[in-house]
Image (cartoon, rainbow, N blue to C red; front, side, top):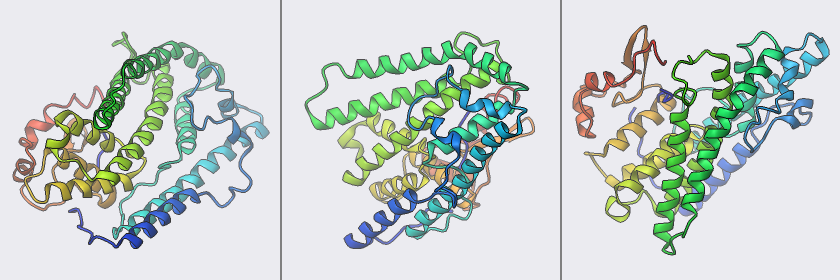
Length: 353
């Protein structure tokens, strides 16, 4: 279960057109220049880190210095990791500034790489490598994982090709089909991480699964970023669409792309505000409850509807609540059933954190 979790949404008074433009320009600039202080001398290994392409499990030599006993070689990796950590701090500061521009103090915002996919990739590589004692063991696991990864990637290519056949000429129908394509691949990648295809016997700490998860995890992080930017552009142009205009499926697809856009919580927040404006007052749809909790848990450290869960020992529990009312009453306002019934649907903590 990979949904990490995330009061009350502040209603921001509409800004003038000039102020809205200035805020967006400030955001773009802040995110563009959010680099560590030593960005003028990037580490030597940085050029070898894939920037906007899938991780090739047959070309991971850029990680090899992580295992080297040669101090000079290991120093190259350490410099890359220092770069990623500094970039992470800078990206977090820029994201907090973006929320400040929206009138929100994101006091609980976790430190993360956010829109810098190379930063995230370096940190993921370190986490994966830390589970191996040597480069040969790491490389062998990568080679064994590669066919599984390529199979999933081929499946996403097939989805893309199917949706490219006879594209609709109507713009709204074309938008709906594109959202459907993105949604299907979003779900395909996430469900693929439940385990090695055809190998339910392989546990999450198996070396082959570790490299499989590393490669596919970077795939869906990259797609999550693209999808939330795309969804945000649609919402900025039209507002959150009315259900009767798009249909239930398109609503669901758009919401899912935003819900999984954790690399841009500022855009998730904007979408939440747009959804709130669309429905004006409770009752809100279920999707509002999930998005509200996802965003506000990151921003304020609490959620309202208990949709974001974690493990407490062997028990599934809701992440911190904002205490704004009786939880089951609040859940009913967005069409959700009792919290106890919801928690019972999750797999045991011992099987999947």
